[in-house]
Amino acid sequence: MQLSNYHSHCNFCDGRSYPEDFVKFALARGFRAYGFSSHSPLPFETFWNMSREDMDEYLAEIARLKDKYRGQIEIYVGLEVDYLDHTYNASIPYFQNLPLDYRIGSIHFLPLSPVLKEENMACIDGAYSDFERTVDSSFGGDIRRMVRRYFDSAMAMVEAGGIDIVGHIDKIYMNSQRYPGFSIDADWYRKPLLELFDLVREKGLMVELNTKNLVKKQETYPHKQYLKALCERHIPVLVNSDCHYPDLVNDGREEGFQLLADAGFKSTMELVGGKWEERSLQD
Image (cartoon, rainbow, N blue to C red; front, side, top):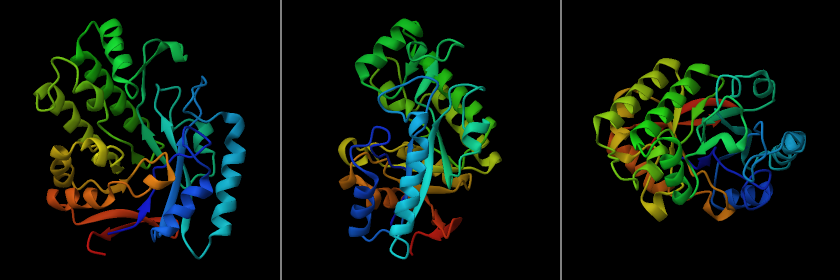
């Protein structure tokens, strides 16, 4: 089982400790590689995203750790970049010109207006009470409309490009599954998800198996019942814990690898010497 993690958050965004604390924990657990992916800056300030003013310090700190721990663990610097619309996503020059090792593309917000301000955003990744109010007030109480909007945005993100990894590709179900009328098995959910998989395959991107909620909620993103569909499409995958605390860098990894094996996967992707390589699950 490969010991690496490329989706993690530290105190430069909403992570709960300094970058070096995550590295030390990863080393103590025998990790070969560790990557940071702080939430990218947005056109507006939130409590969980980086500020542009902190970008230079973030890059410098990870560079310092790369040098300090060289020969002990491979350290990489990335970002988890929000797709908002065609004007703000990982493909724009700001993100493409940053000296990053990789970029994760994720959907956390669905803009309700062309004016990109926090008050004009529908957040799909917060508390359920807020999510429920948003569905009621902005989508007419129709969970199908929000799900469709989510997958439309995810398709646009993949089309826009500029990313290496699609982050928590179906996280819309995390809150949606509690809303009346939702069904993860319904054609209106399954069809756009599989269409998204097809586009990811066409564009040659990787998909993470996000294990952040695997231990505490028995949830993965993608949902475990859709892992076989990923495998059938020969989409490369990697296991990421999406951790915000140092002691969770390895959370759900063993269980995640077992789920991949059960779905038919034979390998995952690893950054080795700065290049993505396919590694057998048996290594």
